[in-house]
Image 1 (cartoon, protein in one colour):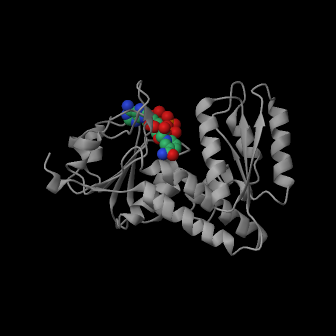
Image 2 (cartoon, protein in one colour; image 1 turned 120 degrees about the vertical axis):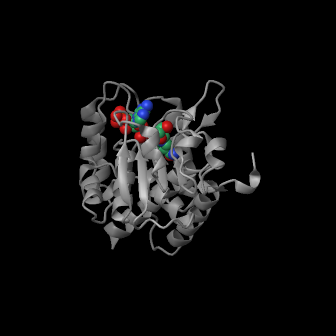
Length: 284
Ligand code: NDP
């Protein structure tokens, strides 16, 4: 590969570290410690790792973090009672229920029960609706991190043609709303899209959130495009791979995020930011 034409690598790890340092400095000026409570139901190993890193990162930023661990046998009524207690607790600024929940628990009733003012995952329909309407509110962490990486890369969003690959409530939809609110011209693609490669090739900005390792090939990328790869796919050997074939895409794109070290580290940093945002809004 001709390294002279290699894309700029957007260093999510560095951007996230800088953001976390800014948040810690901000928290240090407050007369209180923002409180974040994470609720973990069951023993899912990946969720346990995520919850531990959220706890560590929050503490490091001066946020008072707690994790409530509940057995997989917890009933919906019991879980809703825990949420109600957190909604009522003035020391709790942010509530995050780690997903996925173990069967047969359903995520939606639990998300619906969280006070929207404490919904630091930004998944409550009130916050999703605010985002869709271009109103201020708590925004899902991974989409927020995606936008911060685009800003860091100096990408001009106004009028740009953006393609969001994926339409999940967690990633694709909120990313598309944020890009729309930033005056990009947004196309949302998904599993029923006709000629996905052609749609991708038209994009100045391509955000991939599919969950399929290396699905987006180099010849799907327009020369000079900026590529944000949200995908985290764990291969049989334990390594992580994005939704974009990195080497191929980096030979064509202007800038690209790596996996790991791209969007992933931004997610937790944005959770901390949301917690501080929620604390300031609640406490005035
Ligand atoms: P979902 O499975 O909820 O959504 C995937 C989307 O991709 C759906 O809209 C689906 O379409 C679409 N899709 C699936 N297969 C195809 C295909 N063959 N062609 C076109 N579109 C397709 O995943 P998430 O949005 O939750 O996550 C996406 C990826 O991002 C995953 O790899 C996940 O691990 C990662 N992720 C990373 C985070 C981070 O911190 N960096 C945080 C959250 C997620 P349809 O709607 O038609 O089914």
